[in-house]
Image (cartoon, rainbow, N blue to C red; front, side, top):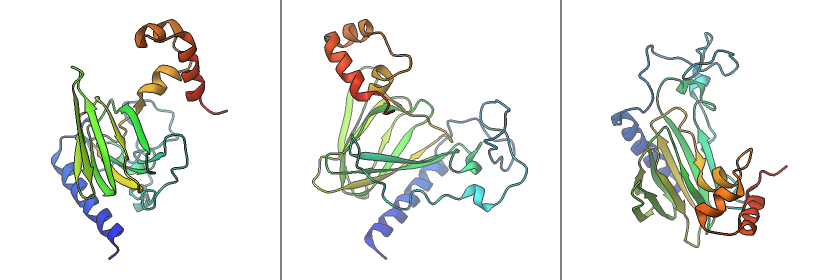
Length: 219
């Protein structure tokens, strides 16, 4: 068995144990399955259930291969939530894969609806989260090691190594949500007023406009 496949298998096993033992952040389900009908116009806390389901509703191959990291941050997040696996609806779990180029970063962000646990597949990462008292908990984690980010707290991962890295992430929500701090403040629509950002960050308007222009969505 190739080393990368072995690491992936161990990662999935560890995350399965986590998901089996961790209380879901989502409401408890009231039936065996409720495969999401993403086309339904019904609005509720979750998705409406569709009637015709199959094994494919519970399958996804999108995390099997590394994603391209040729982007601004040198890292790519591939998600496997209810939008990709409709069968996750009401089950309270989801996963993701993050691939990092050398120097790549998954910038500071939060998941408002889930705790996250990551398992390093390849390489090593410097990770950390910040509490509401602004205390940083950080650590370097290597292949086969695990780190947890509490629900709703700002956290990050960066590959300070000289080789690519990869990690599998698990969440106790079918749709954890992700809010990148910098994008939320400097690339919202409509934009946050410059005066708010200049006072909050104690910088000038030119610096704020420069950051906004760099983080603005590509057209």
